[in-house]
Image (tube, rainbow, N blue to C red; front, side, top):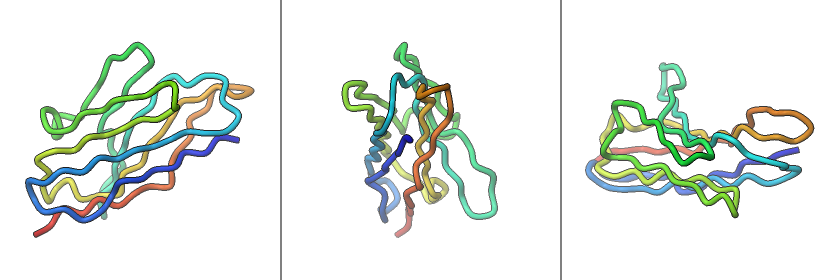
Length: 118
């Protein structure tokens, strides 16, 4: 089994910053892509950012220039640094990892709430 544990969400004022972390643990042989999705109330889950093992990155247009994804492969951990936060960034943020155990599968964290409000 594989577990993803997220941390770092919370309440922040517009213009503020937060850093999310997500650590994968368990019977992991290899991790390919790791990243973050978010889901706001009444909306579909959307990709925020992801990062394959080659170090390339992909961002949603709405967060480019404000959010930065990074990974520590030795710790099986992915981070999301979020700056210049806006009320429309309010959502539950989920991390995921594409993991090889006995086969390749996507695993998800439990979600962490990010609320941007004055």
